[in-house]
Amino acid sequence: MSKSKLMIAGAALLAALALPVASGAQNRLDASRQPVQYGADAGEYTPDGFSLRGRAEVTQGSNRLRAGAIRGFTTNGDLTRIEATGDVYFVTPDQSMRGDRAVYTLNDGNVVVTGDVILTQGKSVLTGSRLVYNVRTETARIEGGGANGRVQGVFYPQGN
Image (cartoon, rainbow, N blue to C red; front, side, top):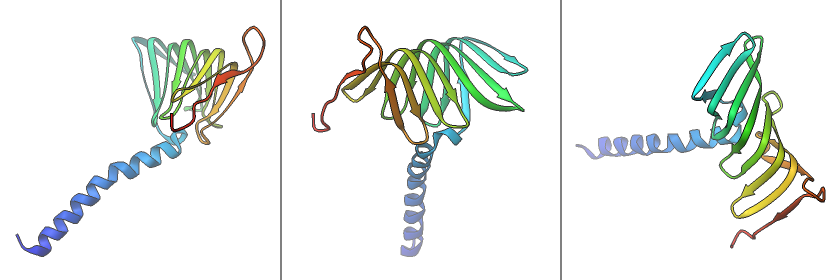
């Protein structure tokens, strides 16, 4: 093979290897614009959405919502809201949120987790009764709970 053909083949290989990385970065930047996939042990389609039961799971980009039951609501054929109940977990590449109930509003990107809420990032843990996480900005706001009505947590420096 000539030197120029070998260089072109090498450049094509490098470009092909770079594509998944660029695509993954784009997915993470705005997961709220990605398709929504779902699955469960049982489910049904209704005129206003869908209902999932038993190991119910919804994924969008690199975010995953898992619960005992999930209900999706549509308006004019567009998925607008997802409600999850029973051992709810919402997992992003950097955080994990747990609670009793969650509502994800797709138009504003907010996931509201309520109940005994636990937010973890690495070894750091934050607890409360209500958490609002935005999938677009990747920011979280938590409100107090527990016996004393306060937010509690422990933060570990990045190096630990």
